[in-house]
Amino acid sequence: MLDVDPALLGDTDERKQLREVLRDFFTEAAASQDVREHLTTGREHDPALWARMATELGVQGLVIPEEYGGSGFSFAELAVVFEEAGRALLCAPLLSTTVLATYTLLLSGDREACARYLPGIAEGTRTATVAGFDEGGGGGLRATPGKGGWVGSGAADFVLDGYGADLILVAARTADGAGLFACEREAEGLTRTARTVLDGTRPQALVTFADTPFTQIGQPGNAAAITGRVLDIGRAALAAEQVGGSVHALDATMSYVLQRRQFGRQIGSFQAIKHRLADLLVEIEAARSAAVYAVACVTASAEHLPVAASTAKVVCSGAYRQATAEYVQLHGGIGFTWEHSAHLYLRRARAAEVLFGTADDHRARLGGLLGFNVA
Image 1 (cartoon, helix red, strand yellow):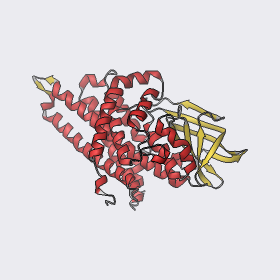
Image 2 (cartoon, helix red, strand yellow):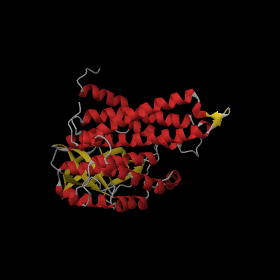
Image 3 (cartoon, one colour):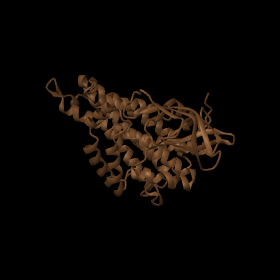
Image 4 (cartoon, helix red, strand yellow):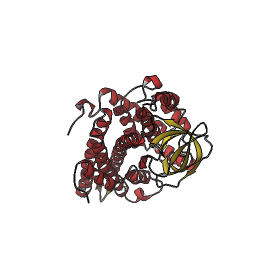
C-alpha cells in the first residue's frame, strides 16, 4: 500500500545534481586503487577523505537540522549518497555515523545530546557508531547508576566501525528497561578489539565496557522503539548502497563483454550472455524499486517502514549477490584474480547480506508483520 507522497519516489532535479557531484567526487577521490591502498593501511577510514566529504560536499551533515550545524535535507538526499558510495565501494564510516548514530540522536528527542554531538558529526570531526541495537538493549550490555552518573558493563561484538569511532551510542538494560547512553572515545574501562571480517571495506570490532562512564540520552527505558526504527532506517540506507553496487557490477560487466572477443565476435553478442545480463537487469530494477520505496517511507515517516525495510533487505541482498556473482563469472579468468576489483564487491555483497539480519530473518519478520502464520 502506497502511503507516501509520490514526489518522494525517485530523483528530483536537485537529487540528480547531487548524484552527478557525488559521482565525480568519488571517481576522483575513491577510485578502486584508492580502495586497495586503504585496505593495506589497517585504518578504518581515510581522515582526509572524510574531512573533504564534510567540507566540500556536506555529506555528514546532510540530514542534520540547521540548528545543529547541518543542512536539514531529507533522507531521500542521503540515500543518493549511499547509492553513489555503493557504486564506488567507499571506505568510510558513512552508515554508522550518518545514519545509525545521527538518527539515534535525532529520534531520542534529547536536545542537549543533539547539541553536544551532532555539530561535530556535521563538521566531519566526529565519527560515531552504535552498540547493542540488534538486541534492543536487552542483551549483554547493562547500565547502572554510579558515582556522578551511569556506568556500563558487558560486551557488544561486530560493532560497525567500532574500533575507531569517537562516540558510541549504546542500548543497555537498566532497572527501568532498555535505555540509550553515550560513551566517549577516551572513557575509562572501554576496550576495543578489531575483528577480522570478510569485507575489509566495512570494519567491525568487539567493544567491551567495564564500569565505563555512560551519559544517558533521552528518557529512561526509551531504547526499544528507537533502536527498532533506527535499524529500519539503516536497512533502507543499506538497500540504496546495494543498488549502487549492483549497478556498478552490471555496468562493468557490460563494458567487458562488449570488449572481449572470442571465436571472432564480442562475447556479449552470444545469446546465453544476453540472457544472463537481461535477468540481472530485471533483478536490479526490482531492487531499485524496493529501495526507493523504503527510502520514501523513511523520508515520510510512514507507518509501513518496517515492511518496506525488510522487503528491501530481502530483494536488494539477492540482487547484489547475483550482480557480483555475474561480475566475477562473466569476466572469465581475470574476474577470479586478486588484482581485479570484482572480489571487493563480492565481499561487500556477501557481508551486507547478513548485516541487520539475513534474508531468511526478514522473510520471517515479514510474515509476522503481514499477519501470516509463520512456523
